[in-house]
Amino acid sequence: MRVALAALTFACLTSTAAFALTPAETLDANHAASGAWDGKTAVRTEYAYSGQGLTGKVGTTADLNDGRFVQDFVIGPLTGGNGYDGHQVWSKDNAGIVTLQEGGDAIPLAVNNAYRNANLWWRADRGGAAISGDGTKTDAGNTYDVLTIVPKGGVTFDAWFDARSHLLYRIEEKQGGVLNVTTTTNYRATDGALIAVDTVTGTGNPKFDQHSTLLSAKFLPRPDPAIYAPPASAAPDFAIAGGLHSVTIPFDFTGNHIHAKVMMNGKGPFNFVFDTGGVNLITPDLANQLGLTVEGASEVRGVGEQTAQSGMAHVDAVDVGGAKLDNQLFIVYALDSLYPSSGIHMPGMIGYETFRRFVTTVDYGAKTITLTDPKYFDPKDAGTPIRIAFNQNAVTVPGSYAGIPGKFQIDTGSGGGLALDAPFVLDNHLDAKLHSVEAVSGWGTGGPSRAQVARGDALVIGKDIVIPHPVVDFATDKAGAFADPTLAGNIGGGILKRFIVTFDYGRSVMYLKPVTSPVADLDTYDRAGVWFNLAQNGFTVIDVTKGGPAATAGLMPGDIITAVDGKPNPALPDMRYRLRNDPPGTVVSLTVMRDGKPLTFAITLRDQI
Image 1 (cartoon, rainbow, N blue to C red):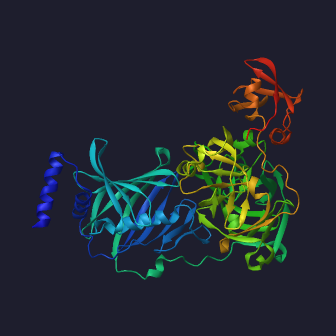
Image 2: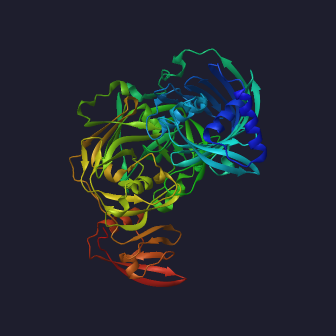
Image 3: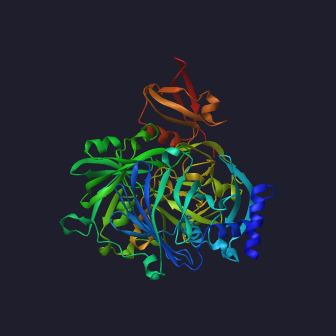
């Protein structure tokens, strides 16, 4: 009788649309409308996938009591899997190498997925989640009852339920600061339980939407819990030539970036950037030189607020000074589009996939990289150990800034020092604490990044490594890498060059050992107040700091610098180095073209922070 009365009440409310349902009524209505889920213990679903220029299949097994899950996929050139056993989140790459995912929002997002898998919101206690109503909203002329839900141990998401059918229509959830929207439509019954046939997930650009179509669904007896646990990693797909235990190669350190030689499919050497915050990557030009087939069109995010596009290609053989990897999947992206902002051509990048296989030691003092077979690594002289955690390919460490704890990404690919993410800055009111200047502070795949820059309070890495007063970028970006609310900030080459840094990804440890030689260009900041990129006829002025030396001299965005002190422009990294390190009071004469007319400006360098 109570069920029948509730159903009648919902029907009346739906037909009149006079009142919004309470959260409890919304979830009870969804439970009633979703069919015969009660008493079922596990489900296996398989979907056809299409999106981002790729097609394939995705299969998931989920426990309907607590939501634990394991997923496998074959999508174009991508094969692998991931899972959550109620405690650990893990991922498996193309070669079968398994990595625990403990950084960023990896675990809270897995908790959210488990909550929804098991429909914990149907339980009397709503699965322990905090749930509030967000009224009714419309989309394409239809009305939805919207709830804001925070599972215990998870993060906030919004759930939209169709006001007529009461079926789940949409999930809106931020992942790494990016809003992901998943819509579910066209439900059909399996053993009396309704399951959405069509699922679309996107981040705002339909070009990159991912579509899944239900192929099959089967309810199962409760499987052995071990199926959700991290599996054993596959056999290694790497070796060091000549039976050596390690190899050491030199690197060029320009603009706080690491560049070293790499052979690809027996060709090269090519000058790659080495980036712990990145992935194995090559440019379309290099892919073409190597005769590779490029597949897919995925969305790329990084520093800056814009997005870009990438593909994927298999590389048969990678050789880093005798450290060899076979059959590797590389991202194909126009990395060399960053040449105007860096002044260095970059045909490729060595990232997470390579570091995951070797123990990697970056000696910033000697300017060498050593790759060691993990079986033979001895940490006794490596320095202070710090536990690291992974969020996909990114490496994070615990630490604090100004006594405020947080998680920091370790990023050898960043030429900056310490950049604090915009949400961390705002949440802790750090933007008002120190004298600073507002400026373009860096450039990435998403274009310029802006920040308030200051000489800051103490940075602590782990528990014992203290950097007293580094230069700090207090990011103001609204999107991109520095708008991620799950991180406190990013630690780049400007900080790391104080150390010999050893990454043992397999054991989730980073070691820091101070270099013994003097460190050049340490904790310096631009004394001119100008950001410029390379242009065809010189340097293009992109940004001029308000009230800074360049602005005082009369320089403006859009000016083309054609000469410095009467001589042709130096290399871009050298010019930036000079404007950071020449002493205050130095006068720099710039010859500039503005509206087709030559002008000369004398900039007197001074400390801005």
